[in-house]
Length: 257
Image (tube, rainbow, N blue to C red):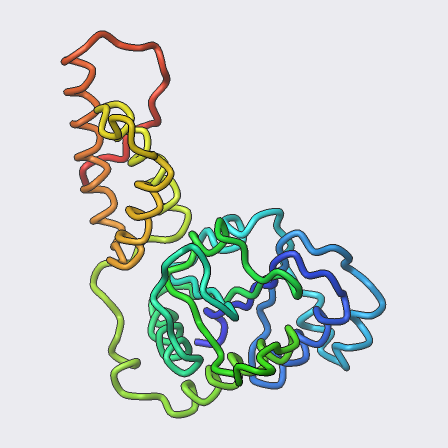
């Protein structure tokens, strides 16, 4: 299960925090660490603060965007210190660990941490299924990045050691959709809504934000995504029949499964 769970650091400013995070997850039995657009890496400070967790540093995957870092994941949890404009289900570290562990039975799970100063941006939270909030005290709430990583890694370690029976039988008959599949789904959905003139003056961005939250909460399976994209295909076809083609390219259909 530990091999199916990764920790992702987004836009990390200080290379020392990367090394400290590598050490934090290695002490709890994890080895998969990803970086999204780090300011400085590789760096001697990262090696020093890793304190021997060189295997984690050597295996780091670096990507330019969060979507690419979690493309094959079926569950993405964003660790955030405060409420943002994006409304997400909020989980405690223990709840988040149990959710990630259940997802790792038949898929890939990611725990995502933002920049040390600004945290995760709203656009990055839009790729997360839920938010994890560490309940620190209100008058001194800021945790170091590596400390936050340690808290989540510890809770995951406890959950794995306890090996709750429901997790051992949590595999589904149908595989859950990956983030990559969902991003194609959302692109198709947005194009379809435009083709059928759904917005009628309303803000497309607001509508899509709400629909993203709805479908991420639904934990769609691969087959369900294919069925919905098949419906989008038919809606686009009927829209073309109802009025002359406007010359704009539509995305490739998703199929009805």
